[in-house]
Length: 140
Image (tube, rainbow, N blue to C red; front, side, top):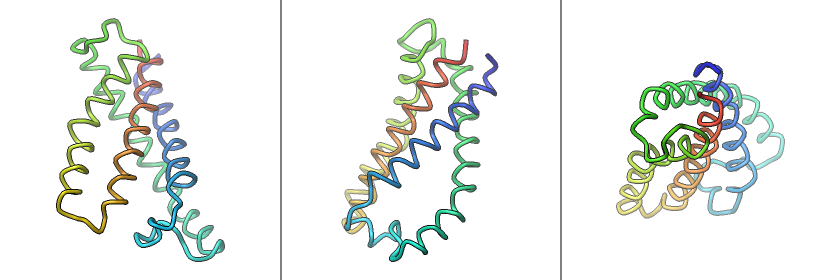
């Protein structure tokens, strides 16, 4: 399968994992201070309707970039021959070198946003691994 199609599929997977993480998992009272939880259900529906297309577009671009990078660099991974584990390895390495170190480093200095940084830390790990698994499965 083409890396473009694999990237689009990975983008859809990343979008749904992101939706579950921010819509179902990170819904506690500590997140209200950061504007992630609207005060009323009607405002929540309005916010979701406005933000879903943007999030979907960004997830598709993310999937395409991940698939293009994986296609180019998969020969340098520890997991040889490609496949879902190679995709997850690639995605986790990207996450570790960028998002993980950034959120841990910011959490040292910004005490008030530490709950938001923790949520970002874990949601990106899930998103990256879902997309990496799909890219590794579909890119041959």
